[in-house]
Length: 479
Image (cartoon, rainbow, N blue to C red; front, side, top):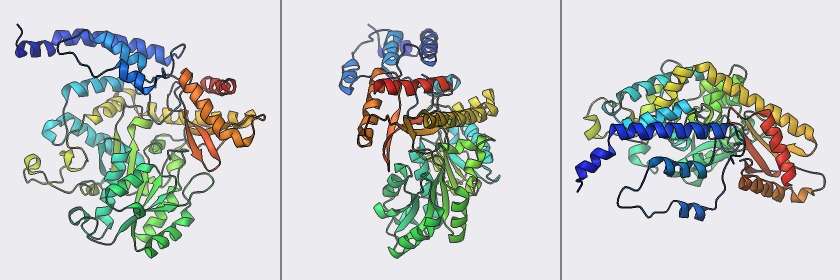
């Protein structure tokens, strides 16, 4: 009879791992070939939630039950295929295969990064990849930051630092009631995670002071003075302005230069949520979209959106690197031993996470082996693709574009002459449902002031003009 030690030795057996690894890479390579070439593979093999609960039940065997390959075949077949060129949905990348291999290494090494000793290589990589990103933004040498798990955690981290810098009292130790109630001026189109972060910090609904946007869904800088005065009259102390570089709904870029001027006049923290659009700094053709970002106090930049790495990798960058230590200003004695708590190498001092995966490994490896021009060309290509797509939609006669795209997000709707305008909203929802349940395309929808629009994010580098022409035809046929 096998002892537990025998079973553990089998589970960690290098030769078994080698065999399974070779099989899995072959399997994934075949999957990648099928997904990237499209063909008969659906973008998403639609199944109701209850169906997948049945496919993957919670009835786990007590003893070993079989081989890895057949199990993974079921996982691959039933999953959403983001590498398919007809995936034009959410702002989630079709990850580079090279980055996925790094995930493999990260998971096996499992080097957590709260303290340098637990992640010596990944800590150094993180420090230097952040220095490179800060340099791309135009930040000074004194800049610094951290990688964290997604834009929501990133924006919360930046706003916590803004509170420490501008509240005028120690809200970290004294709490939200230790001084006057605070607020942040935020464009009406900002991602919901900003309002969520404000509520997490205990400021309530009035912790967000909305700022109107223009017809292109960009923050109106001339409205900032009124928003500031309104917040002050309500007894709130404004401490920051949050601007977007590539908003979620339409991909709009706020006028960062004008917002920076306003913040400088009123001594406010200037934060840019560039989760999607900060990558524009890499493109010489589209860098002007983020003019003024170099003046921000903090910037959030998602590598898992426009830098083609797996989720989640978000950079939180501070123009003054010392600010990166203020968001979570506390000490865990069992980790940091009463030492200097401003060491770059102990990353747990500056992030929401204590243990986190080797995030930097994926991004650092891809930058090192593929070169920075690859990413610059990718940003340029996707932004240009969106402009061409919007042009064809506008010229078609039976489609309407909500707004000329600022980046690679295009919002549009099908408006055939024989369908009354009063039925357009319902039509978009029905068309989307047909396309995704058939597996032809995956796209999403959004509600704008004029109604419901279909929304595409052209994030897969293998999506072509021909694929988007096919999308238009698929919508016509579905109607």
